Length: 266
Ligand code: NAD
Image (cartoon, rainbow, N blue to C red; front, side, top):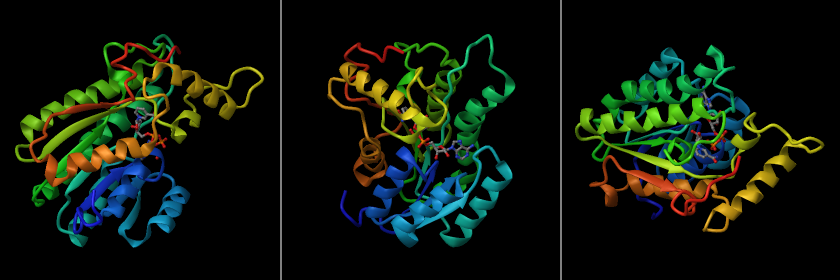
C-alpha cells in the first residue's frame, strides 16, 4: 500500500495499543491515515502515540461503555466529520469450564467481543456513511470454526462466532457500508500472556507460552507463528479502493493451519 493511499482517511481501531490492533494502527498511519486508537491502558496508548506521532489519536475507553463511545463519536464528528474505517479488534480470552463459568467471565467475553462491536457500529455508522468507501472490519478467530473445538474455550469461540454472524447481518442492513471478517490463526501478541494460559509446573509464563507456540509451528504449513502485520496487511487491503467489491467476506489468515486439517493440540 503506498504512503498516501489512506491520506485524509480516518480509521478507528479498538484495542489499538497492542498486538494486532497496534499493527493495524501502525500500517494505517504509514499509509497516510489518521487513526483513532481506542483502548483501556493509558501507558500503552501513550507509548504507541510516542512512536506513531500526531496522526495516532489515543482515546481511553472501555468498549463496553456506551456513554464513553458516544463521547468519542462526538469528538470524531467534530474533529473530522466522517469515519472511513472501523476495526472492531478488542478482545479477551480465558479458558473456563462450562460447569464453572460465572457472569463475570461471560461478560468478559461477550460484552467486549459482541456488545462492544455492536455499540461501535451503532454510534459510528452515521459517520461511516459520510465516507466515499466506508468499511467495517471485525476480528474473529479460528477458534470460532466448526473444525476447532478447544477444551474450555466455549465463551471465547461462541462470542467470536456471534461476531461473524453479526457481520453478515451488517452486510444486509448497512447498505453501502462494506463489512468483512478476518479470522486470524495463532498470532504472536500479548494476548497469550494476558491470563489465557496458565504456566506449566516449574516454568515461567513466558517459557510456557513460547513452548506452546513452538509446538504449534508443527501444525502450521507456513512454518511459523503469525505476526500482527500478517493481519494488518489484509485489513488495509480490504479497506482500500482495490477492494470496493469485497463485502461479506470471511478471510482466514492462519498460515494454512485450518486448511491442512492440523490443529493446536491443547
Ligand atoms: P492483545 O491482548 O494484544 O489485544 C487485545 C486488545 O483488546 C488489548 O489492547 C486490550 O486492552 C483490548 N481490550 C480488551 N478488552 C477491552 C475493553 N473492555 N475495552 C477496550 N479494550 C479492550 O491481543 P491480540 O492478539 O492483538 O488480540 C486482538 C484481537 O485478535 C482480539 O479480538 C483477539 O481475540 C483476536 N485474535 C487473536 C489471536 C492471536 O493468536 N493473538 C488469534 C485469533 C484472534
